[in-house]
Image 1: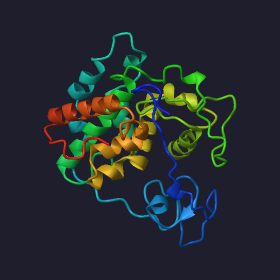
Image 2: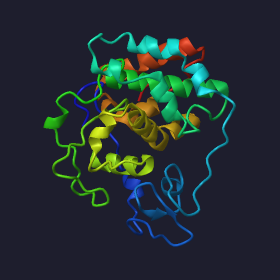
Image 3: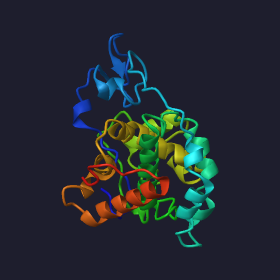
Image 4: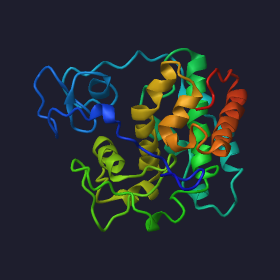
Length: 268
């Protein structure tokens, strides 16, 4: 599913959340409506992305300022490693990132300050790998690839649109564009192109995916390896050890820059 080592992200709809009571919600009062529009009562339904019902409350935040960690120097040092002609150089910015972060107050602000620094290092490690140091906005040859899950009736594809990788974590597939757009406030199924034209929305989609699929793995202490599996499980278990090493390399580099130990379980 991920063709290039840094260019596409998989959003996998876990089989565990397909114990469907109802689609598009309308759940009974004792059940939660999940981010995918299904009813249930465990963490897959009541946890991250829960739309209504007895949703689990988010963990308390700490006093860390993400902007004080993601400094101009830190952000620009990543960008400056890309080629001067990359389209992403005129698109991605620290200001757009911080603007988007304002919509996700849990990002980089749960646990200790060291936990915050590790999460920020992990996020930017994956972004660096996915975009080639903020060079790419869209997946190379993306329009030639079919990322429509026709079996997903909750978020049906528009046949004239392409759901290939776009943005800092290369959002892809209709089942990611649909709920991301609904959460952020754009028409993900009929206007997926906005992820490659509006830098604030682009960063918001990356953070949306992160907070719904990756964040909880870190705060529960599973380590950086679990984040690789969440973003591109196909690389794990010997699937592509070179790209796993690339991600781990960026993560350890950024942990060193941010003055925090990377922790255990770095590989998947």
